[in-house]
Amino acid sequence: MDYFTKALKHYADFTGRARRTEYWMFYLFYIIFYVVCSAVGYFLGTEFITMIYALALLIPSLSAGARRLHDTGRSGWWQLLNLIPIIGTIILIILLAQDSHDDNEYGPNPKAGL
Image (cartoon, rainbow, N blue to C red; front, side, top):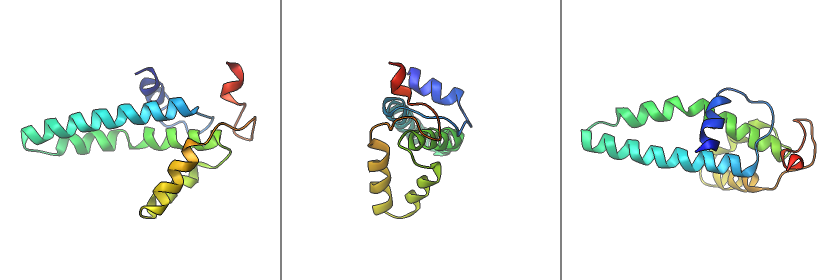
């Protein structure tokens, strides 16, 4: 849960780097809360709750993805691969799952402090 709140604190911060654990834990909690909102919306007969949740977390999701891509040495613009059906999403998942690179133009390696 700490990773989810950390990503929300960096709501629109597209600079810096995010470790693999930080990104994937944020994404896990995002999906869990999305499913809960969908279930609540289903029982209430409206999908308004799910739509509000997804729109509210659109910017934090993009910023977390950009920081994760920065950690692998790539620009956050690589997230546009999601616009390519299936293949783009698969390529992006592979890029997001790669290990951290050493110090790069986006900052020092966050694993170096451990």
